[in-house]
Length: 92
Image (tube, rainbow, N blue to C red; front, side, top):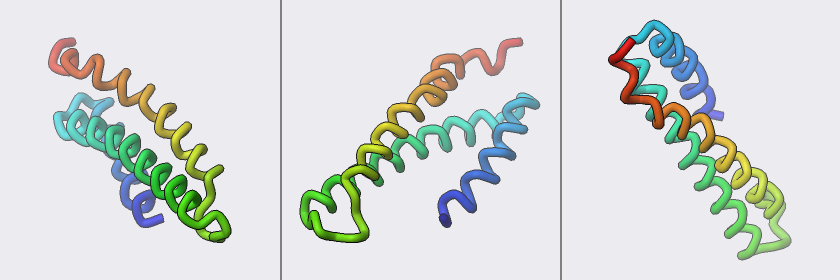
C-alpha cells in the first residue's frame, strides 16, 4: 500500500511531464516502469519461496506468486516500449 500511495501519484505526474517533454518525466517514467517490474518479481519470489517453505501458512500463496510473476512479464511490455524509444525524446 505504501508503495502504491507514493508511486501511483508520482507516475501520474511523471507521465504528464513526459507528455509535455520535460526531462524529469523521462527520468521518472523510466525509473518507475523498471521499479514496477523488479518489485513484482520480488513479490513473486517472496510468495513462491514462502509457500514452498511453509505450505500451511495463511500469509503466503503460490498462486499469488504465479500472479505476480505474470504481472512482471506483462509489466515488461510498457517498460520495453518506453526504453526502446527513449533516444527519440530529444528529437521531434
